Image 1 (spheres, helix red, strand yellow):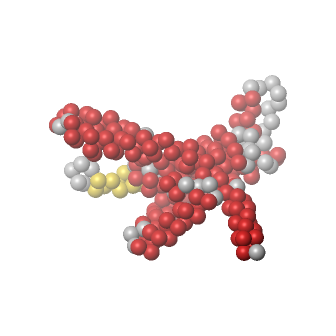
Image 2 (image 1 turned 60 degrees about the vertical axis):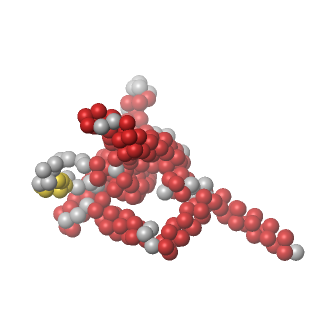
Image 3 (image 1 turned 135 degrees about the horizontal axis):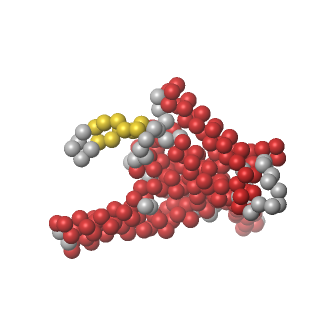
Length: 256
């Protein structure tokens, strides 16, 4: 009798896990992180070589030259991971929604994230002089510091864009005499403009009314609290428990 109850419980839990694993947002996160996983691995190898192997073998200018190679790999992978994850999430969400133009979704998600970034940033030069600069995109706003922002923006604005794209009144039909790529571009022209316009409005409200931006808000209220949680014993227990739970839903904890 107990074995029957246990089997029934395990079956119900397996069904629940399968249903959660197929939840569209969890599925999108899983697919997106799995897609860019090779870049993280490459970045890890570059960091390892720069800080261990190269320092054992080379010195002086030769060491700087080899580390320059490693820094280029890091810049093209880890240091733009927030921007990459926004684009890949836009693409994967469109695929999971069975939207017929997933590439445009990736473009909209990436553009939306850049729009949400601050136009003025404070940077410190090699001479340790701090000043404000405009019209620049530092790696601090493109890389791991923008991961949560990339996820949130990628999901929200891709959903908005896909919903707007289904409205027939917003489509521009050029007929069958134009190449398919051109026809697709004009079909989504108005939805793209509306989506990015809304992103710009939200970003403007943050900047003008509150003097902040999405990256700063997410870093302050999400990333920093999670970082403090991860430094305590109970936080580590919770995080590893959550990671193992996500594994049941098809999301490996190493990509979170």
